[in-house]
Picture 1 (cartoon, rainbow, N blue to C red):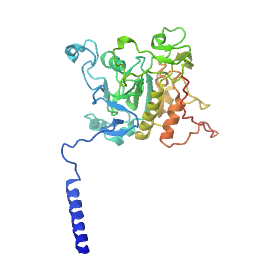
Picture 2 (picture 1 turned 90 degrees about the vertical axis):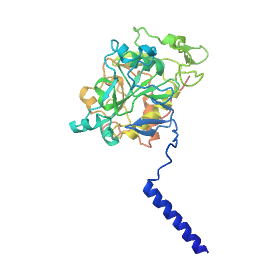
Picture 3 (picture 1 turned 60 degrees about the vertical axis):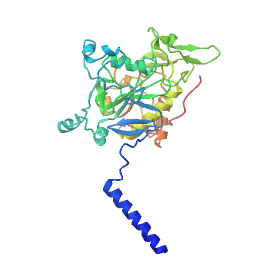
Length: 356
């Protein structure tokens, strides 16, 4: 009896294996596969980040593939009504960095495979948006400036992806072909002689924290998190030198830092040529100015917009680079890096400075 039962079980398993082999173990047609909500899209494939991501195809997302102006009246937003205001119906293009003519022909229709894209992408560029919120950032890029960016990081820590990373977004001039870009919601940095909007956007209580005050004309629910009250990580403005000039800026929010570190880790994992580090001088310190052209051409890693163009200061003096890179490296289980000829190492401090 026991032998017969075992034979029956073996026959059942063999039949199940045979059916799975023939049918490919396919799930039932129409079955819904839920996402976790932290995925980014790279050459049509999804990769987890560990932090909330809203894709261009999600409700509430921002779609940079659309031709029409997103925030214009619907009956005036199409290309026919927009072409006197914009140069092109598309605000993105085809990556060509390091591709042969044959490869360009293969991928130009959208046929990117992950290994080819991994060979092309080797930089992650950080920007501040000088818009304050990601919604306004997308409005400026898509409706007014003929520009695009792969990611926007809002003040509440929500990441928005607007394009598959196979696309060449228009955000960093000479690095567009080889880079992924993120616009971090922040009102920017300014010199002493510059007129700035910081007093309008930040309110400091003499006996309390500094808070972000989104102007009322930004409308209700300016960010995705209901009733979000944003605070820069540090209460006082941060001063520093960018491109040889003194700049001051309010810090990014803790929510942005936590999300940015996870996004950085995910990108460095997906794209092995993005070295998880930032540009350094001969002493191992952050280089706060444009890289010389030859060094920029040879650079593979995380960098700021000001490392690419002399007329840019983003992401400004406030960004806590050691936290972003250090925490990303911790998540990736990577060691510290040597930074000089003597083999000395800098101890990354993956601890966010918060005093607000």
